[in-house]
Image: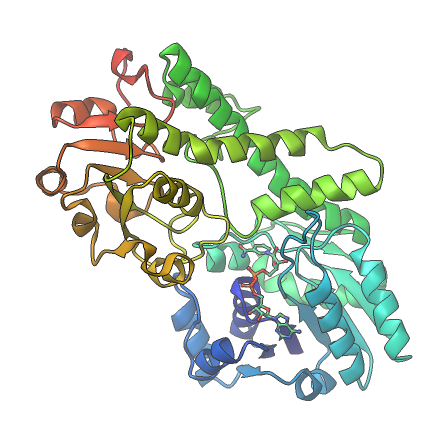
Length: 441
Ligand code: NAD
């Protein structure tokens, strides 16, 4: 099948590459000149494990192409995926300008029947908007399908190739068959393709993200209580996560969630609810709890030192989570901004997100060549993202570098008992009672 994917970002490029891998001929349309140049040189413009090899293989096999011309790509295609960004608009709702622009470009370029697939995360009712826009431009037959994407950055290929489920909002049989055919290679182990109406597919994506975000926010709230009560959130996590009705995922307390999806999707769902007269209380609470959580680590540091002016803080981890260079809405940005405002100097290190962070802070912070350089002559080390390489560091080097062995851990990656034995003053999140635990974790 000939497929067009509009948008060569995290979702578009993974989608295009994975479809090409199953034998389809895919053209990815990208309008950002810098990104397109990289794609045309067979370089991935962002960090995603495994994507570079897979992309190069499919380029070599003549199954994956890149262009900035929708007009050239669309006429030959049977389906066109829209995978452009839907950032947060000024009022909290999803900004649909990119989606609508892409739909219009597709409509102007169509020369025959086409299935237009909304892969971007879009609010309820967007399929109707897109349909209306296309109808204004062309009288050719088309259908609009919703196919929200559930991949996680850092594990995107695996998530796409082995999805828990594929959600498809569709109204006609022809488009249903096309989508079933496209996804069949990815669900061979029996995971379902769930066909439903378009609106339910649109809501499913937001509902999934808000449910996951709410779990994290709830555990973060429990962590605050644990700190206040001298309890240990890790013990609480194990206790509730082993309840089969609850399950163990997304229960880790930390410095708050960020990323290109959870924060904006929560706010978009709240906004959609308000527009329809449905107050989304749980989504609102998850959002508010997260805003508070992002400040919690800063407040701990501030409280410990009393005065941050003139202090040097080493920071490990800048991306919103490990295995990505994405810093959109990353808690690190908020924490660093607060530390700078309080007069501290920052020495930061991240395995992949330094370039993106430099675009935000420029010369306001120091960028370190490795994790230990970030500790050198610092008053404390702050861990904000739990990259694997931070989990078993050389504690001797950390201690030798720091002016005083103080570690604030926004992801609870170390054992408090071990840290104490090693002579560190260790400040995790929600683990005030960890040293009292009968069974150390
Ligand atoms: P992104 O910003 O990384 O990529 C979007 C790309 O589209 C950009 O490169 C941009 O230049 C390009 N673009 C915009 N308008 C265009 C046009 N008219 N023609 C061609 N290219 C155009 O965004 P992303 O992270 O890939 O997210 C895309 C969508 O998928 C969003 O709705 C997002 O909410 C959703 N989503 C993202 C993730 C994730 O983990 N990143 C996961 C699931 C769903």
